[in-house]
Image (cartoon, rainbow, N blue to C red; front, side, top):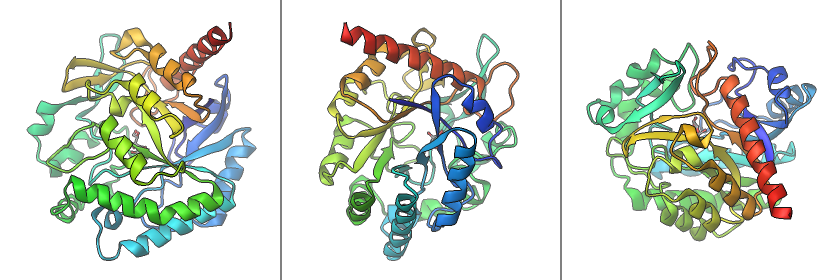
Amino acid sequence: MEMTLRWYGSTFDTVTLQQIRQIPGVTGVITTLYDTAPGEVWSRARIRAMKEEVEAAGLFVAGIESVNVHDAIKTGAPDRDRYIDHYIETLTHLGQEDLHLVCYNFMPVFDWTRTELARVRPDGSTVLAYTQEAVDALDPEKMFASIADDMNGTVMPGWEPERMEHVQELFRLYQDVDEEKLFENLRYFLERIMPVCNEYDIRMAIHPDDPAWSVFGLPRINTCKENILRVMEMVDDPHNGVTFCTGSYGTNLRNDLPDMIRSLKGRIHFAHIRNLKFWSPTNFEEAAHLSSDGSFDMYEIVKALYEIGFDGPIRPDHGRMIWGEKAMPGYGLYDRALGAMYLQGLWEAIAKGAKE
Ligand code: DNO
């Protein structure tokens, strides 16, 4: 296991590499070229510059989150091959720059969905939260406007204003795409990129849908054990793997997280670990990482990862906003640093206990 932190690059992130470097045990960052659009080819020069900046701060790039997939690929549009060619070119450049982990998602229109970005908890911290009632009452086109005020002036991944200006058009593109078609389009994409992934040993790690059910009537497939195993089997190559995000799969209380982790042995390339506090099965908020602050047993989750021999990067996922910090919701320094320490404590105790 390698402990990492997500970092959006010096122009976008309020957290600096120097701060990340001082969190004990954190050796790497998970980053991206945040200003690239889906479908754009990433140049080798820009990838190299990003690596050099991170390395100059005494850290390394443990993986990319995300290289976003163009909607033409997700919808299976006639021009999808052109965008897959671009994706392959980006993967080639990443491989040539010695980067071997790519997180991506296959969610239609919206990346993760939350209905509040700053719900106040009894201790005064603020967190991202979700209620199905709020989603049901909302016109999808108004979704962005309704949460934009809570973004602390930052740009949230998947919620770029340029993208949200075209929500109606995006919905139209997915009109004829049902779950089966989405599975099929994902299979097509994966089959076409596997050769380059094999050539450069690039581990593709699909991120689950968040929340793990359909929102606004859009199809969603990466939601449960059965579906993710189907994705693993339909393109049965170890480079076709998973980002195991506990806060996303965990939105559906029927998902048994430690059992899912065990069933994905060998295919989890990256882990996002966070805790959720449920008030009802469709009303939850993001909690501190500590088990007792939320609804998940973090010890059992980390133990399952340890037991399957997981050796990829872990990042503490969304943290609470605490101690007066102003940052991208979920991505402040303080609570994620606490999370990194807690997760490393669990890992150390589990690893030492196993050896006794
Ligand atoms: C939200 C993140 C997602 C994730 C993408 C992966 O905070 O977990 O935006 O990075 O879905 O492509």
